[in-house]
Structure formats: C-alpha cells, structure tokens
Length: 136
Image (cartoon, rainbow, N blue to C red; front, side):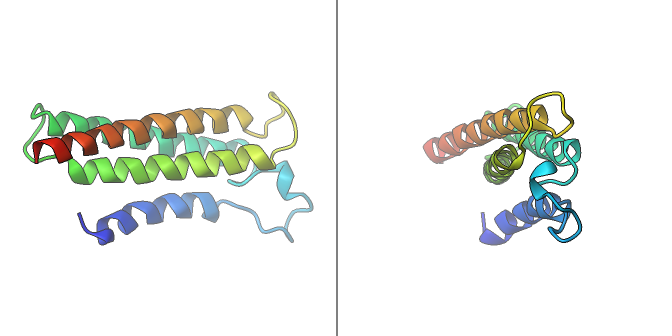
C-alpha cells in the first residue's frame, strides 16, 4: 500500500474535523462548541468517522479471512487504522475543549462514542494487518 492511499484516506477525515471548526474571531468562546463546530455536530461527525472505520475494518478482516472477495484486505485495514486514529484524536480534542457536562448540547457523549468507535476501528484494522503479515 502506497502512502498515496493513506493520505487519500486521511484527507477527508481531517477536513471533517477542521472544516467544521469555527474561527475564534467568529465566536467569543471556542470552548463552548468544541473542536468540530457547534456542539453535537462535530461530535456526531467524529462518531460517524469512528463507525466508518469499524465497518471498513470489519470488511477488511472478512476479506483477509477469505470470506468476502479476494485479496488480503491490507488496504482496507490501513484505511480503518487511519480513520480510527483520526476519530480518536478529534474526539479527545473535542472532550478537552468542551467545558460543561452532559445534557448541555456540547456533544460530550457523542465525542465519547467517537472515541470508543475509533478505538474499536483501530484495533480491528490492526488485527487485520497482523493477519496480513502472517499469511503473506
């Protein structure tokens, strides 16, 4: 897998995180909205990013086991790892920048879901990569 594929997979993920962020001059408090925009929007985007990494990792794992299609599933595993890590980093940044608790509309619960789904997607992708290395 070339670096071109990894960059192509990471670029949309970074655009989701940084493209939805508000400029500091446009809003008095960046901490009120977190990293991904106005509360729930960014956290939901990060959770969806994590969910996509879990789905891609699962499909790559099935492909590497020979259940779906042909091939090793290595490319899908790399994409799942990159998307999962991106989801985790953006979710942690969102959690660090929100100031209020649950139920306030800042998306803390969504960021936690994004963190967990990113962790699962990264692990599934890593397990698939390990299987690809073992089988050749």
